[in-house]
Length: 161
Image (cartoon, rainbow, N blue to C red):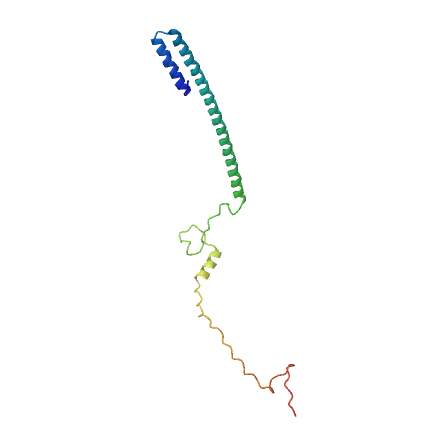
């Protein structure tokens, strides 16, 4: 017999029916026993496959739980590192205390420092000076004659007599 276990079982059951219809009780019983044998083999193979599948699912769940634990630990370490790093810490909001930003209905109290800062802020801006032109230099004097030129020691040459 060839085929899958289910096909073999079906074939023996068909042979048992045919034998029963032909009033061959011995052959019918023989074919039924064969069908039952293959049915038992099939059910045992299915139980083994189911047990194997459940074992694999259990292992997969354990691996997934381990990965989840590792991910949670890594996230905790990263969060702790971020908290330790002041650059990663939450930064306070910057508030603008300039007179333009503070409205008259503000709940801030006016202090002497803020009074001093207000006149300085309201002082007229200095007039900008025009762009400065580069200074021109006087041209170099023409070279002197040999008699008038200074000597290497800086003294004037003595007049020849």
